[in-house]
Every structure is written in C-alpha cells, then in structure tokens.
Length: 337
Image 1: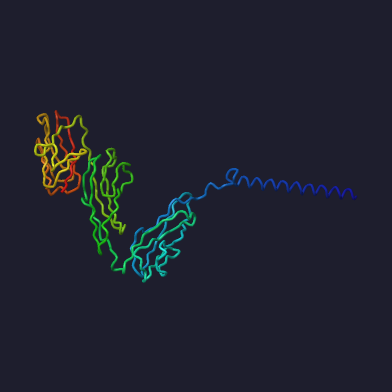
Image 2: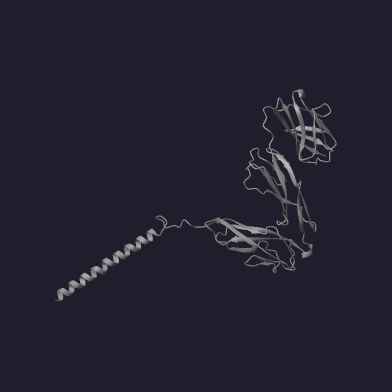
C-alpha cells in the first residue's frame, strides 16, 4: 500500500515538472517572437529632424503678450511637446514664457528684442527659435496694409528672366522687405525666383502660367501677386542676323554689350538693324513686357522711354518670314542711369 502511494506521488511530481517546462518554453518563445529580429529593438522609434516656431518674427510691446506655436517634424510621428524658454539671460524677471508658449513682456523690460526658443522634449538637441521686436506701446508697432507686386501681369519667354518689384505700405514705417516665391509647386526645378525678385524661367518649363508672390517679412499674412504668362519663341530653321549700332560703334559709353546683354544708358539710343533684310518679309519688332513695337529693317531703343524702368531686363524680339519659313531673334537689354 505504501509503495502504491509513493508511486502515485512520484508520477504527480513528474507531471508537474513536465508542465512547468512546457510553460517555460512557451514564455521564452513569446519573448523572442515579440521582439524585432533577434535583438528585440523596435523599428518604429520616432526621430526629430526639426522644430519650427511661429510666428517667426512677431512684434510685441511692453506689458503685452504673444502666443507662439511649435511644430515638431521627423519620422514615425514624433511627440509634438516642446519646452519653451527665452534665450536672453539679462531680460527683466517679469518677462516670461509659459509652458504653452505664451510670452508676457514686462512693462519694465529694457531689451528691444527677445529670442524665444522651443526645444523638443523627445530630442533636446533639436530646437527652433523666433525673434521678437519690442516696442514701447501697441500704437507704435508697425503694421502692413498691403503688398503690391509690379508689374501685376507680364509675359516672359521660356528660357528668359524678369525682375519684379514689391511695394509695401503700412503704418509706423514698417520694413519693406519681402520674401519671393512661386505659387505653383509643379513647376520645373530650374524655374526659380531669388531674394531680389528676379524670376528665371527654365527653357523646359511645362507650365504656361506662373504666379509670383511677395510676402511681407513683417506680417506674413500680407502678400501681393503677379501673373506671368510664359511665351515660346517659334522654332527656327535659321536665325536672323542682326547688327547693333550705337553711333557707328558696337559698344560705347552709352550702350555696352556684355554677356549677351545690351546695357543702355538712360539718355542713350541703340539701333538694331537686320542684315540681308531683302530676303525677309513681314518683319515685326516687339519689346516684351511693354507696349513698344515696330516694323521695318531697323528698330531704335531709346533709354529715356517711359516704358523702360531702370535696372530691369527686357527682351527685344524680331520675327520675319523667309520664303514662308519663320526666322527670329531675341535680344536682352536693360536700362541704367
């Protein structure tokens, strides 16, 4: 009887040990399979690439407040939380910024500018900044009324360029600086506008129209636009030959040809004359972006023409037929004082 009880207990003990072993192996398998590869490292770890603070250059006044926002960009949806701070350590103790980005400027603040900083809590090496200009009171803050781009409509040949001007109006003598941009995102990569408002159009630009925009650096809600119609010079089986004469000289102190551009002084004239003109018919001259046109064997540019603005590039085109085949030439020129 005693042997039977001992055998029964032994069998139960073996069964318990076996069950524990199976459970242990299952747990090990789960821990391996739940990892990423053999290392168990999660491939979905987010990273932070940049922090952008807006508004970027706001005005503020003594005793006033400014609300800032921060956008954290990166991979795998990084946390949008940031820590706000003021860079200047010599600011007034009453000038503070809250955890939600609300800047309060002390009535006794002596600094004329502050730098607000937003640091990513996910990656403290990544931060963004905004520059705040401080004014004595709300009434003295410059405001922008409007931004106008001149001209508002213009034609530019593909492969050509054009320089725009921006007129900024407002109160309290605001900065007249603007940032230039092209609205269309599907433009050719080589079609661009620089910081001086000079538009360069790729010869391979697929679009027929562009919108150029000038945005105030003081108030980015204020901007002006211009519509650019892109033209194509008809393909040539040949090109017209042209002679440029300025008082019998190819160059003079009043008109200089350099880099393919004819620079004309404000008070000078330049004559453009077609060579072997007897071979051509239907000769037409035009100065693009103006109402200046003409016809015949020669064409005269007068620098003091009201249609020519100092410093801008213009394009003189001459088109003609030779035995029914179109021939053309384009000359770039600008007018200087």
